[in-house]
Length: 585
Image (cartoon, rainbow, N blue to C red; front, top):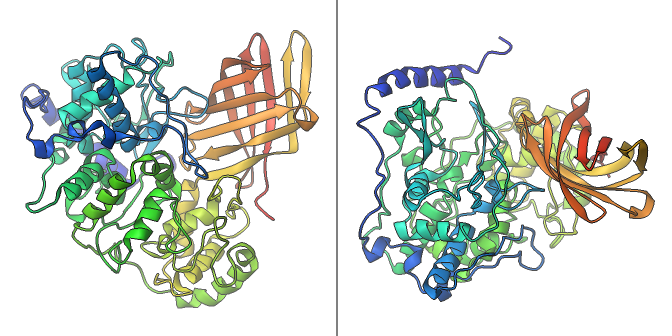
């Protein structure tokens, strides 16, 4: 019925409610370990035991790559030992890919506010700058350790329960971090400029909004322990295991989850759907048929550190962020060690595919040559360093068709800065047409995929697609009023990203008179279930906080514009209807 949760959601929520009652009897006697180990053997001592030269990372993107500049310390300790600890913490934060989750456009780095969709509602990442009021500046070392290692924040739930973190925070992986490394992370974060930005409240459905109910989940699925290394592993493999299992928390995406959203240990790194999104993280076990077992070291390094190549393809979606903001900035030896460890992961088959739909291949071939070949070529080889190849690209044929379908639906950013972007075809092609194209691409030019996409496959992914599109002057109307005077804008540039859950959006925009004169720049991210844009406005060189009402404008099922209204500081009020560029040639 309309308004009723999915049956599996009702089952989980009901189970949580029942478990909450049972948990009340055990809450005072069952807690996670909150005391750091006094001494750790060298095998599990973590990154903080490495020499300083081994923890050099880049704060800015490498030439020709996308990504975000990471903030450098503003309060570097004078004590050489403490300064070395901060530098190691910076390495750990980069390797842990903390910035993308704890930052949004228009806000200071690590000020939180990024929406993470779940079947039970939306969780917003917290402010982890050293603001004593809004961030973690007042946290003790012990409180920070408990948050990272045990998934328990300062505070309480229902008075007697600890404030358990939702497992969208990968504390299940971070529990393998050494105490020294956790303290190094805190040392780096403590040196940043505090951001006076309050956390955005989560919007979880009852009873999932009661943190106390997470005790049952933790008892069943959270079993913290230090890193476990196999006998005979070299130091490089152990190092790679520490990066993959703990810091990079690869399992959070690449391992399938059960109905309670816990990863399935027996299917470790065998591929999984990313929660509440249209992306599938592929099998990265050492399987030659389904994983990375047939990839050369050169191909893996290119994919993980160089944004891919024209052989195996390029990272996209969430993985592109991991490469741009984390892996590409690590020393090459670290990524080599990751590859060494992945070679030890027991080969597993990907999830079984559905029936082969050979009847759709002829239609898919016709549609591909009509809609796709002008960029990707009749032979699927793409354009070097501009348009990725589809031929022999495992990203489009290995595993289910979800990734390819999602890219066709929502488009995609340029492979390299300044190059061509992928148009969005979701508003132009039907579900059956997109399924046919996917089946053709996944089985052509030597690709070993299965023609298993259907119209239902596309229909299920359509609400989850990520729309990434340029802002367009088009039918835009925008005025900035102050003191009875109104300034009209005729030009706009920028981009908007709207994720499938509609609560997570980001926008950068520059509004101006003709030829870009006297621009007003906006940068922000969604809040309030996607109904507000919170960020910063730059006017005449001065930057002001902004909170704008946001409305997405649809024509039939197609998003055609966004409407923004609200104050930009100093008595200025913005009223704008911003058109989105049409996905065509």
